[in-house]
Image 1 (tube, rainbow, N blue to C red):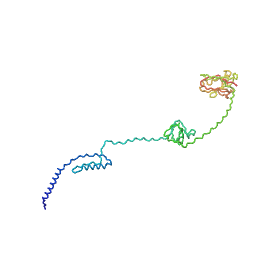
Image 2: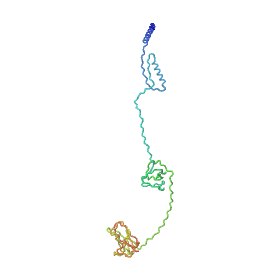
Image 3: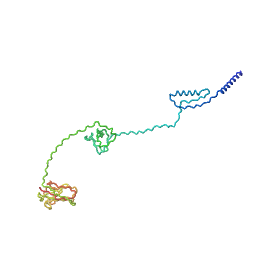
Image 4: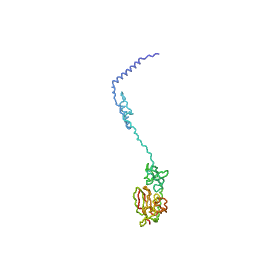
Length: 330
C-alpha cells in the first residue's frame, strides 16, 4: 500500500523552520558581536611551594574572566617548565694527580771503610775478637749499644760488634734498637806488681894480654885497601913475634910482628889484592901464633884463634888505607 503524504503537516513544519531562521537573524542584529581580546601567554616562573595555592586561584580568575557567552577560551600554559638549552659547557672532571710509588725501605747496614777491621764479641775493645772484615764488606745491622758508637751486625750468622768510626752506614738507622742483652765485658785482670829485676852481676872485662890502642888513621886509597900497625910494650918499645889476624866473613890472613922484614914490631895486610868491596866488615886482633909462621904470613891452618886483645873493627864504605893500628903488650 502506498502512503500519501499529508501536505498540511509538511507545510506546518516548513513554516516553523522559517520562523526560527528569522529569529536568529534578528537576534544577531540586536546583539553586537564581541571583539576578541589577545591575552599574552604567561611566562613560567618557578613558584615556591607556599605560593602554589595563590597561583591556582589566579588561573581560575583568568579562566572565569575569559569564559562567557560568545567568548573565546584561551588555553593556559601548564606548570611543566620548558627546558631551554644554554651555552654553558659541562665541566670536565679534574685530572687525578699521580701518586709516586712508595720506595722500598733499605735495611740498615754497615760497609767497612778500612783495609781490615776487628769484629768483636761486644761493644768495646776489651771484648774478644770474633773475626776480621776487609774493606768493602757489607753487613746488616741488628742493633746498637746505648751510646750509639758501636753497631751489632750479623757476622756470618752470629752476633758481632764493630765500632762506628770504621764503617759507612746506609738504610733507616733510626729504626735500629738498642740491644737489650749486651754481654758483660770480660773482667779486668788486676795488674800484678812487676817482679823486681835483680841487679845485673857485673861481669869483669876479659883480661887480655894485649890492649888495643887509639892511634889508628884511615884515609881513602882508591887503588888498594890496606891495613898496618905495630905491637909494642908498655914503654912503647917494639915487640916482635906477635901474631895478628885479619878477618872478614871469617879468618883470612895471619901475620907476625917484625917477621917479614918490614921493621921491628911492624905488621901489615893487603888482603883483597885491590880495593875492598863496599860494605865489607873487617876485624883485626891478636891471636896465639902457630908453631911456625912463615915470613909472609899464612891464610889457612891458623890454629887457636881465641882473641888475645880487643878487636879493631871497620865496615868498608870505600877503599881505604888504615895505618897506626897498635896493640900494647900488658
